[in-house]
Amino acid sequence: MIACLCVPLFPLAARLRSEPNLKNSAVVVCEGNGTAARVVAGTRAARKAGIRPGFTLPQARALLPKLVARGRDRASERAAQEALLDAAGQFSPRVEDAREGLVYLDGDGLERIFPGSDPLKDLGRALIQAAEKENLPARAGIAGSKLAARIAATLPNSPIVVPPGGEAAFLAPLPLARLSPEVDVSGTLARWGLRSIGDLAKLPAREIAARLGRGGEKLHEMARGLDPEPLAVRLPPPVFSEGMELEWPLVTLEPFLAMAGAALDRLLPRLAVEGLGCPQLETALHLEPEGHDVRSIPLPAPTRDPKTLLRLLQLDLERHPPGAPVIAFSVTLHPDRPRRGQMTLFGPTEISPDLLATALARLFVLLGDDRAGSPRAVDSHLPERFALVPYAPPPPPTVRRPPKNGRGLLAVRILRPAVAMEVLTDEEKLVSVRSLAGDTREKPAVEITGPVRAASGPWTLEEGWWSGSPAVRAYWDVELEGGGLYRLFRDILSGDWFADGVYD
Image 1 (tube, helix red, strand yellow):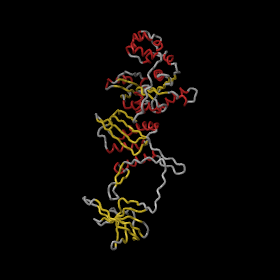
Image 2 (cartoon, one colour; image 1 turned 90 degrees about the vertical axis):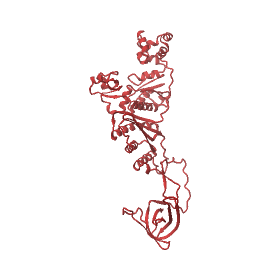
Image 3 (spheres, rainbow, N blue to C red; image 1 turned 135 degrees about the vertical axis):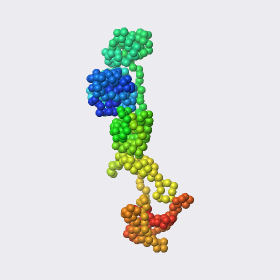
Image 4 (cartoon, rainbow, N blue to C red; image 1 turned 90 degrees about the horizontal axis):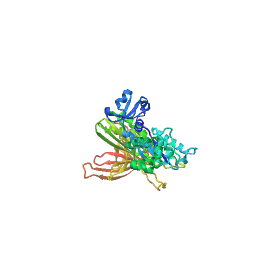
């Protein structure tokens, strides 16, 4: 069985999906420019006023002066088509992208998941509900061929189920226009007095082929319910994208963020259905008059938090303004599998990878690109020198390793920046130490004061003697009488003392 999802008036449905506040207004979607623009589709309020497809925009406004007109938005239509495909993909991995507002899927075996008395009808209702969750008013048809399923999906009283083998009987009373014949062939059929699909199916196939050629022969096969075209399965998209063309150019950030936030709200449920997260956000801006600005924002880990993604986009635009009014945009999410958390039976629950990714992204936004990341050691003798690399923690190990046995090991807590010290000595022997306040006369970061009980050192460190800023230090490990073990060093060139570590 083949199931078909069809969205009537697809250009209008795609536009209203991007601008849901217009659903209750008299709206038409036009194609063309200026007074030559012609109506493609209109809402129910516009149709009640007598506006029909093919009207020019001045003719439509003459009937309804307060009519809201929108041009065809190819970006919104592509996004709506992808959302319709995702809705169908929730039921079957074998989905075909037929054309604008039309999707086929393999329905074999799907009736087993609906235990009711009419499982195929229930399948059609479930397909319609999945499309409505994407703000797309769809109709569904189920039949043994793509042709019969498509025609059933275009009829009212949806969903419609055509029983197996009943395609010809279902098509027979319908008008020939449902087969979408070519213009010249339709004129010939009308002169022959044919009105319904059944009238054409009764004619001899050989005579039809002799008079109308291959096109007429194919049309006759369709009238008999024959559809040899197989289902062309669509591959899943590499990215998820939403966008729209703007009615007016935007020069301020707030209205653009509102529209970008709405696009993210439509995108992220599609990611959630696939069980994916977003490790990279890409935004393409079309600038007035013919500019183009593409920017990519990497994230530390895949996430589906809309506030975090929108905040990242806002800060990126504030740092690097586009420089011209925005007339269209698209938001693209590059998907990836989110990290899985390690479950535990007895211990405390571990941090959710999604929450961790969200927290890291917000932290990077607050601190800046050059002040957040993962530290790495560099080729240097000075312990305070390090480099920042993008934070990308490895996945948790599948097997918990036992801890290594250690005896007499101490951990040193590094002080950054190093705390200035006053050290009293007696013939190279350390007597007492006292931490000094900084330039702002505030208290030092760590209070280190008292007589020295034991001291070990010095260990000399020398680096960069060939450069203009060499470093020569003498390090000491100091234990105070009041308790506490610290690491101190003396800058040989300046004679100043500093504490740069506390042993825990």
